[in-house]
Each structure stands twice: as C-alpha cells, then as structure tokens.
Amino acid sequence: MQQEFGLHPLAVEDARHGHQRPKIEEYGDSLFAVLHTIETWAEDITIGEVDVFVGRNYVLSVRTRTQRGFNDVRERCEREPELLRHGSGYVLYALMDAIVDRYLPVLDALEDELEGIEERIFAGGSARANIEALYDLKHKLMAIKHAAGPLLDSVGKLYGGRVPGVCHGMQEYFRDVYDHLIRINQSIESLREMVTTAISVNLSLITLSEGETTKRLAAYAALVAIPTMIAGIYGMNFEHMPELKMALGYPATLAVMVVIDGYLFYRFRKSGWL
Image (cartoon, rainbow, N blue to C red; front, side, top):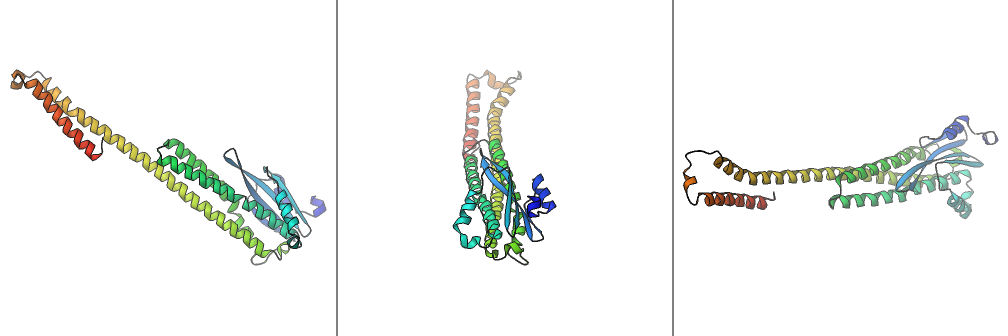
C-alpha cells in the first residue's frame, strides 16, 4: 500500500509503531492524521489509535486497540453524496467528527460518576475509598485530555490560514470539529476542577471528623479526671483528714463527684463536645 499510494516513509513508520501523540501532518499533497479513540470497558476507559492517510483520491485508516469500527461513518458518507463530492477531505472530516463525538458520552459518564462520589462523601462513606475513586476519575480525565487537547492546534490548521489542498471546500466543517474540541476541553477542565474541589472537601471532612473525635476524647478525659483526683486525694492515707471521721463524709464526697461531673457533662453536651 505504501508503494501503491506513495505514502511517506515517516508516516508509515509512525503507523507501524503506533503509540503516537494526536497530530495532523502534511506531506506534500497528502495528510497523515493520528487520532485517539476512547472507549469504556468494565468501568474503565481504553485508549485506541486510528492512523489516517489522506490523499486526493484515497483515504486509508489503520486501527489499533479499538473495538468499535466506523461503519456509521461509511453510512453517513453514503447518505450525503452532495458532500462526498468534496472527496477525501469530507471522508476525513466525517471520520474525525465521529471520533470526537464519541468523547462526549464518556465525559457525561464521568460527570455522573463524580456526582455519585460526591453523594458518598456527604453520606459518610469510606474516606479512603472516596479518595481512591476521585484519583481514578482524575486519571481518566487526564487520558481524555491527552486525546483531545493536542487536536485543537492541528484541526485549527485545516480551516484557517493556508489550508491543505485535500481540505479545500471543507473549512466550515473542520471548524465545527474545532468547536466540539473546545467544548470537550472546557468540560474536561471543569470536571478536573470539580474533582480537585471534591478531594479538598473530602480531606476537610476527614479533618473535621478527627477534630470531633479528639474533642469527645478530651471531654471524656475531663469527666474522669475529677473523680480520679478526689479518689487520689483520699487514697493517700493522710492522718489529719477530719471528714473521714464524719458519718456523712463518704456520701458527701460521692455527691460532690456527681455534681461536678454532671455540670461538666451538661456543659460539654451544650457546647457539642459530646
């Protein structure tokens, strides 16, 4: 195929090795595009790659690590013969538009996932599990960012300035893809900020919970301290302690302990420590 269509050796090498950064490169009168696909699988996302060779009379695509095909792109091209007259430029647009549009449902699913994590945070769920889920979500958003971000500059060159020959007449359509990419990147940044905020809120709630526990422990220690002090004093076996000879000395001491502890308990409950 390289000899048949006169494909550039550097583009062919990139397609063979794969794992390329999303980009669109011009080689003479042909284009070489690297696009990343995003698919969900078992509550995780997988990143695939589509390498596209575009000339005046051909479009070749090479898929790797991608389960879903592009039969819908072919059906769309067949339904729009008036646009298909633009040739390979329209096929490239339809392919790029399909790949970019597939990012949106994934972002919607991640937004729903974030809302679920936020509900668990305020419902008192496991703090460790929430943090792990938020970092996993942040990792997924970064993967989408790496797929959509680099395409902004590349797609911008297909409708503004010196447009490659195969894209003539399709500038408005590539600008539409560019607008979709801007929307996607803005959504990614918004979700990343929300994830960062959720992590901060979760950590703040952990700190508040630990503070409440510390206050309770301090309150219980204060309640125990008074009886311990009084019992310690009377356990020292001093010789001159007149109240020990009193008939009501023991009940009076117990009453003092109860009154002091009752007062402290009341104050702690009123202040929210218990």
